[in-house]
Amino acid sequence: MSRERLYLFDTTLRDGAQTAGIEFSLEDKIAIARMLDDLGVDYIEGGYPGANPVDTTFFESRRTRKATFTAFGMTKRAGRSAANDPGVQGLVNSAADATCFVAKAWDYQVELALSSTTGEHLEGLADTVRTAAAAGKEVLIDLEHFFDGFKANRDYALACVETALEAGARWIVLCDTNGGSMPSEIRQIVGEVMTVAPGDRLGIHPHDDTGQAVANALAAIEAGVRQIQGTLNGLGERCGNANLVTLIPTLVLKPYYADRFETGVSAEQLERLTHISRAFDDRLNRAPARQAPYVGASAFATKAGIHASALLKDFSTYEHVPPESVGNERAIMVSQQAGKSNLLTALARHDIRLEKDDPRLERLLATVKERESRGYSYDGADASFGVLARRVLGTLPDYFDVEHYRTMVERRHNASGEEITVTEAVVKIRVDGELLMSVAEGNGPVNALDSALRKDLGKYSSRIEDLELADFKVRILDGGTGAVTRVLVESRDASGERWVTIGVSPNIIDASFEALYESITYKLLKTEAAQDSTLGANNGRATG
Ligand SMILES: CC(=O)SCCNC(=O)CCNC(=O)[C@H](O)C(C)(C)COP(=O)(O)OP(=O)(O)OC[C@H]1O[C@@H](n2cnc3c(N)ncnc32)[C@H](O)[C@@H]1OP(=O)(O)O
Ligand SMILES: CC(=O)C(=O)O
Image (cartoon, rainbow, N blue to C red; front, side):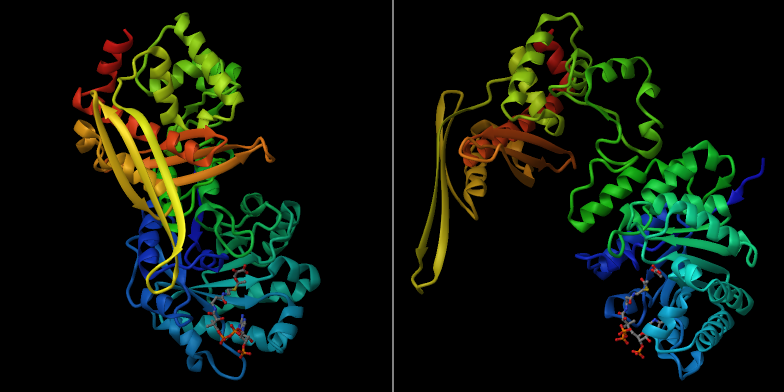
Protein backbone atom coordinates (compact mmCIF):
# COMPACT_ATOMS: atom_id res chain seq x y z
CA MET A 1 0.00 0.00 0.00
CA SER A 2 1.51 3.36 -0.95
CA ARG A 3 1.71 5.76 1.92
CA GLU A 4 0.74 9.42 1.98
CA ARG A 5 3.24 12.03 3.10
CA LEU A 6 2.62 13.82 6.39
CA TYR A 7 4.53 17.07 6.89
CA LEU A 8 5.86 18.01 10.32
CA PHE A 9 5.98 21.71 11.09
CA ASP A 10 7.87 22.76 14.20
CA THR A 11 7.02 26.04 15.92
CA THR A 12 9.21 25.72 19.03
CA LEU A 13 11.11 28.88 18.13
CA ARG A 14 7.92 30.88 17.50
CA ASP A 15 4.92 29.63 19.50
CA GLY A 16 7.37 27.99 21.94
CA ALA A 17 8.92 31.43 22.47
CA GLN A 18 5.48 32.60 23.68
CA THR A 19 5.74 30.21 26.69
CA ALA A 20 5.77 31.99 30.05
CA GLY A 21 9.33 32.03 31.39
CA ILE A 22 11.04 31.18 28.09
CA GLU A 23 13.40 33.62 26.40
CA PHE A 24 15.56 32.25 23.60
CA SER A 25 18.89 33.87 22.83
CA LEU A 26 20.25 33.90 19.30
CA GLU A 27 22.62 31.06 20.26
CA ASP A 28 19.66 29.05 21.63
CA LYS A 29 17.75 29.53 18.40
CA ILE A 30 20.69 28.45 16.26
CA ALA A 31 21.31 25.35 18.41
CA ILE A 32 17.62 24.37 18.58
CA ALA A 33 17.19 24.78 14.81
CA ARG A 34 20.12 22.39 14.38
CA MET A 35 18.49 19.83 16.71
CA LEU A 36 15.22 20.05 14.79
CA ASP A 37 16.99 19.69 11.46
CA ASP A 38 18.74 16.58 12.82
CA LEU A 39 15.39 15.20 13.92
CA GLY A 40 14.04 15.48 10.38
CA VAL A 41 11.07 17.86 10.70
CA ASP A 42 9.98 19.44 7.40
CA TYR A 43 9.46 23.04 8.53
CA ILE A 44 11.18 25.06 11.23
CA GLU A 45 9.35 28.25 12.14
CA GLY A 46 12.13 30.37 13.56
CA GLY A 47 10.24 33.40 14.89
CA TYR A 48 8.96 36.75 13.78
CA PRO A 49 11.49 38.90 11.86
CA GLY A 50 10.96 42.53 12.78
CA ALA A 51 9.36 41.78 16.15
CA ASN A 52 12.58 41.86 18.19
CA PRO A 53 16.36 42.05 17.56
CA VAL A 54 17.00 38.32 18.18
CA ASP A 55 14.42 37.22 15.61
CA THR A 56 15.47 39.87 13.12
CA THR A 57 19.12 38.74 13.34
CA PHE A 58 18.10 35.09 13.23
CA PHE A 59 16.43 35.68 9.87
CA GLU A 60 19.40 37.49 8.34
CA SER A 61 20.69 34.16 7.06
CA ARG A 62 19.24 30.75 6.39
CA ARG A 63 19.51 28.71 9.59
CA THR A 64 18.43 25.28 8.40
CA ARG A 65 20.21 22.72 6.27
CA LYS A 66 17.25 20.63 5.11
CA ALA A 67 14.06 21.89 6.73
CA THR A 68 12.09 24.71 5.13
CA PHE A 69 13.14 27.81 7.05
CA THR A 70 9.92 29.63 7.92
CA ALA A 71 9.22 33.15 9.15
CA PHE A 72 6.04 34.05 11.02
CA GLY A 73 4.15 37.34 10.97
CA MET A 74 0.72 38.87 10.60
CA THR A 75 -1.14 39.68 7.43
CA LYS A 76 -0.97 43.31 6.36
CA ARG A 77 -2.60 45.93 8.49
CA ALA A 78 -5.73 47.69 7.26
CA GLY A 79 -5.25 50.92 5.29
CA ARG A 80 -2.10 49.99 3.36
CA SER A 81 -1.06 47.45 0.73
CA ALA A 82 1.05 44.41 1.56
CA ALA A 83 3.81 45.91 -0.62
CA ASN A 84 3.84 48.93 1.71
CA ASP A 85 3.43 47.08 4.98
CA PRO A 86 6.75 47.01 6.87
CA GLY A 87 5.67 43.89 8.79
CA VAL A 88 4.92 41.88 5.64
CA GLN A 89 8.05 43.23 3.94
CA GLY A 90 10.15 42.19 6.95
CA LEU A 91 9.18 38.58 6.27
CA VAL A 92 9.41 38.82 2.50
CA ASN A 93 12.91 40.32 2.66
CA SER A 94 14.18 37.85 5.26
CA ALA A 95 16.28 34.78 4.49
CA ALA A 96 13.26 32.53 5.07
CA ASP A 97 12.22 29.99 2.43
CA ALA A 98 8.60 30.19 3.56
CA THR A 99 6.41 32.78 5.26
CA CYS A 100 3.55 31.89 7.58
CA PHE A 101 1.03 34.71 8.07
CA VAL A 102 -1.61 34.69 10.78
CA ALA A 103 -5.11 35.84 9.86
CA LYS A 104 -8.28 35.82 11.90
CA ALA A 105 -10.93 33.23 11.00
CA TRP A 106 -13.46 34.30 13.65
CA ASP A 107 -15.60 37.26 12.56
CA TYR A 108 -16.07 38.46 16.15
CA GLN A 109 -12.28 38.74 16.60
CA VAL A 110 -11.90 40.68 13.33
CA GLU A 111 -14.45 43.20 14.51
CA LEU A 112 -13.29 43.32 18.13
CA ALA A 113 -9.49 42.97 17.99
CA LEU A 114 -8.84 44.57 14.60
CA SER A 115 -11.78 47.02 14.50
CA SER A 116 -12.11 45.88 10.90
CA THR A 117 -14.62 44.06 8.71
CA THR A 118 -14.51 40.50 7.44
CA GLY A 119 -14.46 41.77 3.83
CA GLU A 120 -11.48 44.02 4.51
CA HIS A 121 -9.65 41.24 6.38
CA LEU A 122 -10.17 38.75 3.52
CA GLU A 123 -8.81 41.34 1.09
CA GLY A 124 -5.75 41.85 3.29
CA LEU A 125 -5.21 38.11 3.55
CA ALA A 126 -5.31 37.68 -0.23
CA ASP A 127 -3.01 40.67 -0.87
CA THR A 128 -0.49 39.38 1.69
CA VAL A 129 -0.44 35.85 0.23
CA ARG A 130 -0.07 37.10 -3.35
CA THR A 131 2.71 39.53 -2.39
CA ALA A 132 4.78 36.89 -0.56
CA ALA A 133 4.19 34.27 -3.26
CA ALA A 134 5.23 36.76 -5.97
CA ALA A 135 8.46 37.32 -4.03
CA GLY A 136 9.19 33.59 -4.35
CA LYS A 137 8.24 32.49 -0.85
CA GLU A 138 6.27 29.36 -0.07
CA VAL A 139 3.24 30.78 1.73
CA LEU A 140 1.33 29.39 4.69
CA ILE A 141 -1.69 30.95 6.36
CA ASP A 142 -2.37 30.26 10.04
CA LEU A 143 -6.12 30.71 10.46
CA GLU A 144 -6.31 31.83 14.06
CA HIS A 145 -9.36 30.73 16.12
CA PHE A 146 -10.47 28.58 13.19
CA PHE A 147 -12.56 26.06 15.13
CA ASP A 148 -14.29 28.62 17.38
CA GLY A 149 -14.75 30.84 14.32
CA PHE A 150 -16.27 27.98 12.34
CA LYS A 151 -18.81 27.37 15.11
CA ALA A 152 -19.70 31.08 15.20
CA ASN A 153 -19.76 31.80 11.46
CA ARG A 154 -19.13 28.81 9.21
CA ASP A 155 -19.32 30.78 5.96
CA TYR A 156 -16.71 33.34 6.99
CA ALA A 157 -14.31 30.63 8.30
CA LEU A 158 -14.62 28.69 5.04
CA ALA A 159 -14.22 31.92 3.04
CA CYS A 160 -10.84 32.40 4.74
CA VAL A 161 -9.76 28.93 3.58
CA GLU A 162 -10.95 29.51 0.01
CA THR A 163 -9.45 33.00 -0.23
CA ALA A 164 -6.05 31.77 0.94
CA LEU A 165 -6.12 28.85 -1.50
CA GLU A 166 -7.09 31.03 -4.44
CA ALA A 167 -4.41 33.61 -3.61
CA GLY A 168 -1.77 30.87 -3.78
CA ALA A 169 -1.12 29.69 -0.23
CA ARG A 170 0.60 26.29 -0.18
CA TRP A 171 -0.85 25.45 3.24
CA ILE A 172 -3.89 26.65 5.14
CA VAL A 173 -3.40 25.85 8.79
CA LEU A 174 -6.46 25.43 10.99
CA CYS A 175 -5.58 26.73 14.45
CA ASP A 176 -7.27 25.69 17.68
CA THR A 177 -5.95 28.90 19.17
CA ASN A 178 -7.70 28.72 22.56
CA GLY A 179 -7.08 24.97 22.76
CA GLY A 180 -10.60 24.14 23.90
CA SER A 181 -11.76 21.91 21.04
CA MET A 182 -12.50 18.22 21.48
CA PRO A 183 -11.17 15.55 19.07
CA SER A 184 -14.73 14.82 17.89
CA GLU A 185 -15.21 18.50 16.96
CA ILE A 186 -11.87 18.64 15.17
CA ARG A 187 -12.72 15.53 13.17
CA GLN A 188 -16.14 16.86 12.19
CA ILE A 189 -15.03 20.41 11.29
CA VAL A 190 -11.98 19.22 9.30
CA GLY A 191 -14.38 16.94 7.42
CA GLU A 192 -16.43 20.01 6.46
CA VAL A 193 -13.35 22.02 5.44
CA MET A 194 -12.38 19.15 3.14
CA THR A 195 -15.41 20.05 1.02
CA VAL A 196 -13.62 23.27 -0.03
CA ALA A 197 -9.91 22.34 0.26
CA PRO A 198 -7.93 19.14 -0.27
CA GLY A 199 -6.24 17.60 2.79
CA ASP A 200 -2.78 17.94 1.28
CA ARG A 201 -3.20 21.73 1.50
CA LEU A 202 -4.42 21.69 5.13
CA GLY A 203 -2.55 21.81 8.40
CA ILE A 204 -3.52 21.69 12.08
CA HIS A 205 -2.14 23.83 14.91
CA PRO A 206 -3.68 22.55 18.16
CA HIS A 207 -3.09 24.03 21.62
CA ASP A 208 -3.13 21.84 24.72
CA ASP A 209 -5.54 23.62 27.04
CA THR A 210 -7.59 20.47 27.64
CA GLY A 211 -4.56 18.16 27.48
CA GLN A 212 -5.71 16.92 24.05
CA ALA A 213 -3.46 18.69 21.57
CA VAL A 214 -1.84 15.42 20.48
CA ALA A 215 -5.26 13.71 20.27
CA ASN A 216 -6.57 16.66 18.26
CA ALA A 217 -3.63 16.47 15.86
CA LEU A 218 -4.30 12.75 15.34
CA ALA A 219 -8.04 13.41 14.86
CA ALA A 220 -7.20 16.03 12.21
CA ILE A 221 -4.87 13.61 10.40
CA GLU A 222 -7.57 10.94 10.43
CA ALA A 223 -10.01 13.49 8.99
CA GLY A 224 -7.60 14.44 6.19
CA VAL A 225 -5.05 17.17 7.07
CA ARG A 226 -1.50 16.46 6.01
CA GLN A 227 0.53 19.05 7.95
CA ILE A 228 0.89 18.90 11.72
CA GLN A 229 2.23 21.77 13.76
CA GLY A 230 3.75 21.27 17.20
CA THR A 231 6.77 21.91 19.37
CA LEU A 232 9.59 20.14 21.17
CA ASN A 233 8.37 18.84 24.55
CA GLY A 234 5.04 20.60 23.96
CA LEU A 235 6.31 24.12 24.62
CA GLY A 236 3.95 26.95 23.67
CA GLU A 237 1.59 29.66 24.78
CA ARG A 238 -0.38 28.89 28.00
CA CYS A 239 -0.54 25.07 28.28
CA GLY A 240 1.55 24.60 25.16
CA ASN A 241 1.21 23.13 21.69
CA ALA A 242 0.94 19.57 20.41
CA ASN A 243 4.05 17.79 21.63
CA LEU A 244 6.01 16.61 18.58
CA VAL A 245 8.13 14.40 20.82
CA THR A 246 4.96 12.41 21.54
CA LEU A 247 3.42 12.73 18.08
CA ILE A 248 6.43 11.72 16.01
CA PRO A 249 6.97 8.24 17.52
CA THR A 250 3.23 7.64 17.43
CA LEU A 251 3.18 8.43 13.70
CA VAL A 252 6.29 6.38 12.97
CA LEU A 253 5.75 3.38 15.25
CA LYS A 254 2.01 2.82 15.58
CA PRO A 255 0.75 0.63 12.74
CA TYR A 256 -2.47 2.59 12.16
CA TYR A 257 -0.42 5.66 11.16
CA ALA A 258 2.81 4.02 9.99
CA ASP A 259 0.91 1.86 7.46
CA ARG A 260 -0.88 4.86 5.96
CA PHE A 261 1.60 7.72 6.25
CA GLU A 262 5.26 8.51 6.01
CA THR A 263 7.06 11.43 7.63
CA GLY A 264 10.52 12.87 7.06
CA VAL A 265 11.79 11.18 10.24
CA SER A 266 13.76 7.97 9.62
CA ALA A 267 14.15 5.11 12.10
CA GLU A 268 17.72 6.29 12.83
CA GLN A 269 16.53 9.85 13.47
CA LEU A 270 13.81 8.54 15.77
CA GLU A 271 16.52 6.84 17.84
CA ARG A 272 17.88 10.32 18.63
CA LEU A 273 14.53 11.55 19.97
CA THR A 274 15.22 10.99 23.68
CA HIS A 275 18.58 12.71 23.40
CA ILE A 276 17.07 15.67 21.53
CA SER A 277 14.21 16.06 24.01
CA ARG A 278 16.58 16.02 27.00
CA ALA A 279 19.20 18.22 25.35
CA PHE A 280 16.42 20.73 24.71
CA ASP A 281 15.42 20.70 28.39
CA ASP A 282 19.09 21.09 29.35
CA ARG A 283 19.23 24.19 27.18
CA LEU A 284 16.11 25.54 28.90
CA ASN A 285 17.83 24.74 32.22
CA ARG A 286 15.00 22.59 33.46
CA ALA A 287 14.76 18.95 34.48
CA PRO A 288 13.27 16.65 31.84
CA ALA A 289 9.77 15.40 32.73
CA ARG A 290 10.29 11.85 34.01
CA GLN A 291 6.83 10.73 32.89
CA ALA A 292 7.01 12.16 29.38
CA PRO A 293 5.62 9.58 26.92
CA TYR A 294 8.34 7.70 25.00
CA VAL A 295 11.30 9.82 26.20
CA GLY A 296 10.83 10.23 29.97
CA ALA A 297 13.16 8.46 32.40
CA SER A 298 10.08 6.59 33.67
CA ALA A 299 8.63 5.81 30.24
CA PHE A 300 10.11 2.32 30.34
CA ALA A 301 10.68 2.03 34.09
CA THR A 302 9.24 -0.88 35.99
CA LYS A 303 8.92 -0.76 39.72
CA ALA A 304 6.54 -3.59 40.56
CA GLY A 305 8.28 -6.91 41.26
CA ILE A 306 5.76 -9.06 39.42
CA HIS A 307 6.01 -6.82 36.35
CA ALA A 308 9.80 -7.02 36.40
CA SER A 309 9.64 -10.80 36.58
CA ALA A 310 7.45 -11.03 33.44
CA LEU A 311 9.38 -8.26 31.66
CA LEU A 312 12.61 -10.20 31.98
CA LYS A 313 10.95 -13.12 30.16
CA ASP A 314 9.45 -10.98 27.39
CA PHE A 315 9.85 -7.22 27.20
CA SER A 316 6.56 -6.74 25.38
CA THR A 317 4.67 -7.80 28.52
CA TYR A 318 4.97 -4.25 29.91
CA GLU A 319 6.28 -2.14 27.00
CA HIS A 320 4.17 -0.80 24.13
CA VAL A 321 7.22 -0.15 21.91
CA PRO A 322 10.92 -1.03 22.34
CA PRO A 323 12.65 1.77 24.32
CA GLU A 324 15.63 1.75 21.96
CA SER A 325 13.34 2.70 19.02
CA VAL A 326 13.19 6.21 20.53
CA GLY A 327 16.66 6.12 22.07
CA ASN A 328 15.35 5.55 25.59
CA GLU A 329 16.31 2.83 28.05
CA ARG A 330 14.54 0.23 30.04
CA ALA A 331 14.88 0.77 33.80
CA ILE A 332 13.97 -1.82 36.36
CA MET A 333 13.80 0.01 39.65
CA VAL A 334 14.63 -0.95 43.16
CA SER A 335 12.05 0.08 45.74
CA GLN A 336 9.56 -1.15 48.31
CA GLN A 337 7.53 -2.51 45.36
CA ALA A 338 10.50 -4.55 44.15
CA GLY A 339 11.18 -8.25 44.13
CA LYS A 340 14.39 -10.14 43.41
CA SER A 341 13.95 -9.74 39.64
CA ASN A 342 14.14 -5.96 39.96
CA LEU A 343 17.18 -6.29 42.16
CA LEU A 344 19.06 -8.62 39.81
CA THR A 345 18.52 -6.22 36.92
CA ALA A 346 19.58 -3.22 38.98
CA LEU A 347 22.70 -5.08 40.15
CA ALA A 348 23.56 -6.02 36.57
CA ARG A 349 23.48 -2.29 35.72
CA HIS A 350 26.34 -1.96 38.22
CA ASP A 351 28.07 -5.05 36.83
CA ILE A 352 27.28 -7.07 39.90
CA ARG A 353 26.11 -10.58 39.01
CA LEU A 354 24.43 -12.82 41.57
CA GLU A 355 22.26 -15.92 41.28
CA LYS A 356 18.57 -15.53 42.20
CA ASP A 357 18.99 -17.97 45.10
CA ASP A 358 22.06 -16.19 46.56
CA PRO A 359 21.12 -15.48 50.22
CA ARG A 360 22.82 -12.06 50.00
CA LEU A 361 20.07 -11.01 47.63
CA GLU A 362 17.43 -11.43 50.38
CA ARG A 363 19.60 -9.36 52.72
CA LEU A 364 20.00 -6.58 50.15
CA LEU A 365 16.27 -6.58 49.37
CA ALA A 366 15.43 -6.35 53.09
CA THR A 367 17.95 -3.49 53.51
CA VAL A 368 16.49 -1.56 50.58
CA LYS A 369 12.93 -1.96 51.85
CA GLU A 370 13.90 -1.00 55.40
CA ARG A 371 15.74 2.12 54.18
CA GLU A 372 12.87 3.10 51.87
CA SER A 373 10.52 2.93 54.86
CA ARG A 374 12.79 5.56 56.49
CA GLY A 375 12.63 7.94 53.52
CA TYR A 376 15.31 6.72 51.08
CA SER A 377 14.17 6.29 47.50
CA TYR A 378 16.52 4.41 45.23
CA ASP A 379 14.53 4.51 42.01
CA GLY A 380 15.84 8.02 41.38
CA ALA A 381 19.24 7.50 43.03
CA ASP A 382 20.82 4.61 41.21
CA ALA A 383 24.39 5.55 42.15
CA SER A 384 23.49 5.32 45.85
CA PHE A 385 21.94 1.94 45.15
CA GLY A 386 25.26 0.80 43.62
CA VAL A 387 27.16 1.99 46.70
CA LEU A 388 24.63 0.41 49.09
CA ALA A 389 24.68 -2.90 47.22
CA ARG A 390 28.46 -3.13 47.50
CA ARG A 391 28.32 -2.18 51.17
CA VAL A 392 25.75 -4.90 51.95
CA LEU A 393 27.58 -7.47 49.81
CA GLY A 394 30.82 -6.58 51.61
CA THR A 395 32.66 -5.47 48.47
CA LEU A 396 32.85 -1.71 48.96
CA PRO A 397 36.50 -0.64 49.21
CA ASP A 398 37.33 1.34 52.36
CA TYR A 399 38.37 4.53 50.56
CA PHE A 400 38.15 7.03 53.41
CA ASP A 401 36.47 7.54 56.77
CA VAL A 402 34.96 10.81 57.92
CA GLU A 403 36.18 11.52 61.47
CA HIS A 404 34.39 14.81 61.91
CA TYR A 405 32.76 17.67 60.06
CA ARG A 406 31.43 21.06 61.09
CA THR A 407 29.72 23.93 59.27
CA MET A 408 29.29 27.47 60.38
CA VAL A 409 26.99 30.18 58.99
CA GLU A 410 27.54 33.70 60.24
CA ARG A 411 25.59 36.86 59.40
CA ARG A 412 27.63 39.99 60.18
CA HIS A 413 28.58 43.45 58.96
CA ASN A 414 31.72 43.93 56.89
CA ALA A 415 34.14 46.86 57.16
CA SER A 416 31.84 49.02 54.97
CA GLY A 417 28.89 48.26 57.23
CA GLU A 418 27.12 46.00 54.69
CA GLU A 419 25.37 42.88 55.94
CA ILE A 420 27.09 39.73 54.71
CA THR A 421 26.68 36.01 55.30
CA VAL A 422 29.83 33.94 55.66
CA THR A 423 29.74 30.16 55.46
CA GLU A 424 32.60 27.88 56.36
CA ALA A 425 33.07 24.12 56.68
CA VAL A 426 35.77 21.96 58.26
CA VAL A 427 36.10 18.29 57.35
CA LYS A 428 38.50 15.75 58.89
CA ILE A 429 38.91 12.48 57.04
CA ARG A 430 41.22 9.50 57.42
CA VAL A 431 42.79 7.94 54.33
CA ASP A 432 44.97 4.87 54.94
CA GLY A 433 45.41 5.88 58.58
CA GLU A 434 46.49 9.43 57.71
CA LEU A 435 44.34 12.23 59.15
CA LEU A 436 43.58 15.03 56.63
CA MET A 437 41.82 18.26 57.58
CA SER A 438 40.36 20.73 55.07
CA VAL A 439 38.63 24.06 55.52
CA ALA A 440 36.57 25.78 52.81
CA GLU A 441 34.20 28.67 52.38
CA GLY A 442 31.10 28.48 50.23
CA ASN A 443 27.98 30.34 49.22
CA GLY A 444 26.05 28.11 51.61
CA PRO A 445 26.76 25.28 54.05
CA VAL A 446 26.35 22.49 51.49
CA ASN A 447 28.62 24.22 48.99
CA ALA A 448 31.23 24.80 51.72
CA LEU A 449 31.01 21.17 52.88
CA ASP A 450 31.32 19.91 49.33
CA SER A 451 34.42 22.05 48.73
CA ALA A 452 36.03 21.00 52.03
CA LEU A 453 35.29 17.32 51.48
CA ARG A 454 36.85 17.37 48.03
CA LYS A 455 39.77 19.65 48.86
CA ASP A 456 42.11 16.93 50.05
CA LEU A 457 41.28 13.30 49.54
CA GLY A 458 44.92 12.27 49.83
CA LYS A 459 45.89 9.68 47.26
CA TYR A 460 42.39 9.83 45.73
CA SER A 461 42.39 13.56 45.02
CA SER A 462 43.40 13.24 41.36
CA ARG A 463 40.55 10.78 40.77
CA ILE A 464 37.83 13.29 41.63
CA GLU A 465 39.28 16.36 39.91
CA ASP A 466 36.57 16.44 37.21
CA LEU A 467 33.68 15.76 39.61
CA GLU A 468 31.08 18.55 39.66
CA LEU A 469 27.76 19.10 41.39
CA ALA A 470 25.07 19.46 38.72
CA ASP A 471 21.89 19.69 40.78
CA PHE A 472 20.71 19.60 44.36
CA LYS A 473 17.14 18.90 45.44
CA VAL A 474 15.66 18.93 48.91
CA ARG A 475 12.35 17.44 49.94
CA ILE A 476 10.80 17.43 53.37
CA LEU A 477 8.99 14.17 54.08
CA ASP A 478 6.18 14.16 56.72
CA GLY A 479 5.86 17.81 57.71
CA GLY A 480 5.78 18.76 61.36
CA THR A 481 8.31 18.32 64.13
CA GLY A 482 9.24 14.75 63.16
CA ALA A 483 10.04 15.82 59.58
CA VAL A 484 12.74 13.98 57.67
CA THR A 485 14.75 15.65 54.92
CA ARG A 486 15.59 13.82 51.71
CA VAL A 487 18.39 15.30 49.63
CA LEU A 488 19.19 14.25 46.08
CA VAL A 489 22.52 15.33 44.64
CA GLU A 490 23.15 15.03 40.92
CA SER A 491 26.82 14.93 39.94
CA ARG A 492 28.64 14.78 36.65
CA ASP A 493 32.18 14.37 35.37
CA ALA A 494 34.17 15.02 32.23
CA SER A 495 32.92 11.79 30.63
CA GLY A 496 29.44 13.36 30.51
CA GLU A 497 27.97 10.75 32.87
CA ARG A 498 25.51 12.06 35.45
CA TRP A 499 24.60 10.17 38.59
CA VAL A 500 22.27 10.75 41.51
CA THR A 501 22.94 10.00 45.17
CA ILE A 502 20.67 10.34 48.17
CA GLY A 503 20.90 11.32 51.80
CA VAL A 504 18.16 11.17 54.44
CA SER A 505 18.20 12.66 57.91
CA PRO A 506 16.12 14.89 60.19
CA ASN A 507 18.97 17.37 59.64
CA ILE A 508 19.35 18.89 56.16
CA ILE A 509 23.13 19.28 56.46
CA ASP A 510 23.53 15.65 57.51
CA ALA A 511 21.35 14.47 54.64
CA SER A 512 23.34 16.62 52.20
CA PHE A 513 26.64 15.36 53.57
CA GLU A 514 25.55 11.74 53.12
CA ALA A 515 24.55 12.38 49.50
CA LEU A 516 27.86 14.20 48.81
CA TYR A 517 29.84 11.40 50.46
CA GLU A 518 28.08 8.78 48.33
CA SER A 519 28.65 10.79 45.17
CA ILE A 520 32.41 10.81 45.82
CA THR A 521 32.35 7.12 46.69
CA TYR A 522 30.53 6.35 43.45
CA LYS A 523 33.05 8.41 41.49
CA LEU A 524 35.93 6.51 43.13
CA LEU A 525 34.25 3.20 42.23
CA LYS A 526 33.83 4.45 38.68
CA THR A 527 37.47 5.51 38.33
CA GLU A 528 38.59 2.25 39.89
CA ALA A 529 36.58 0.41 37.29
CA ALA A 530 38.24 2.47 34.57
CA GLN A 531 41.67 1.74 36.05
CA ASP A 532 40.92 -1.97 36.28
CA SER A 533 39.55 -1.67 32.76
CA THR A 534 36.07 -2.83 33.77
CA LEU A 535 33.99 -2.51 36.86
CA GLY A 536 32.81 -6.03 36.13
CA ALA A 537 36.32 -7.45 36.51
CA ASN A 538 36.50 -5.67 39.83
CA ASN A 539 33.15 -6.97 41.03
CA GLY A 540 33.89 -10.44 39.80
CA ARG A 541 36.93 -10.52 42.09
CA ALA A 542 35.15 -8.87 44.94
CA THR A 543 31.81 -10.62 44.97
CA GLY A 544 32.85 -13.86 43.34
C1 LIG B 1 -2.31 33.18 18.21
C2 LIG B 1 -0.88 33.54 18.09
O1 LIG B 1 -0.10 32.95 18.76
S1 LIG B 1 -0.46 34.71 16.97
C3 LIG B 1 1.20 35.04 17.31
C4 LIG B 1 1.35 36.19 18.19
N1 LIG B 1 2.74 36.37 18.45
C5 LIG B 1 3.21 37.53 18.80
O2 LIG B 1 2.47 38.48 18.87
C6 LIG B 1 4.66 37.58 19.15
C7 LIG B 1 5.42 38.71 18.51
N2 LIG B 1 4.70 39.96 18.47
C8 LIG B 1 5.27 41.15 18.75
O3 LIG B 1 6.42 41.25 19.13
C9 LIG B 1 4.44 42.38 18.53
O4 LIG B 1 3.07 42.03 18.65
C10 LIG B 1 4.73 43.00 17.13
C11 LIG B 1 6.13 43.59 17.13
C12 LIG B 1 4.59 41.99 16.02
C13 LIG B 1 3.71 44.11 16.84
O5 LIG B 1 3.75 45.02 17.90
P1 LIG B 1 2.77 46.29 17.90
O6 LIG B 1 2.93 47.01 16.62
O7 LIG B 1 3.05 47.00 19.16
O8 LIG B 1 1.30 45.68 17.90
P2 LIG B 1 0.56 44.84 19.03
O9 LIG B 1 1.49 43.84 19.62
O10 LIG B 1 -0.12 45.74 20.00
O11 LIG B 1 -0.52 44.06 18.15
C14 LIG B 1 -1.75 44.66 17.80
C15 LIG B 1 -1.74 45.14 16.36
O12 LIG B 1 -1.68 44.04 15.48
C16 LIG B 1 -2.80 44.07 14.56
N3 LIG B 1 -3.09 42.69 14.22
C17 LIG B 1 -3.21 41.66 15.06
N4 LIG B 1 -3.46 40.54 14.36
C18 LIG B 1 -3.50 40.88 13.07
C19 LIG B 1 -3.71 40.18 11.87
N5 LIG B 1 -3.92 38.85 11.87
N6 LIG B 1 -3.65 40.86 10.72
C20 LIG B 1 -3.42 42.16 10.69
N7 LIG B 1 -3.20 42.89 11.80
C21 LIG B 1 -3.24 42.26 12.97
C22 LIG B 1 -3.86 44.77 15.36
O13 LIG B 1 -4.85 45.35 14.57
C23 LIG B 1 -3.05 45.87 16.05
O14 LIG B 1 -2.78 46.87 15.08
P3 LIG B 1 -2.57 48.42 15.45
O15 LIG B 1 -1.31 48.47 16.29
O16 LIG B 1 -2.42 49.06 14.13
O17 LIG B 1 -3.79 48.80 16.21
C1 LIG C 1 -1.19 31.12 15.13
C2 LIG C 1 -1.24 30.53 16.45
O1 LIG C 1 -0.25 30.33 17.09
C3 LIG C 1 -2.54 30.15 16.99
O2 LIG C 1 -3.56 30.52 16.43
O3 LIG C 1 -2.56 29.49 18.03
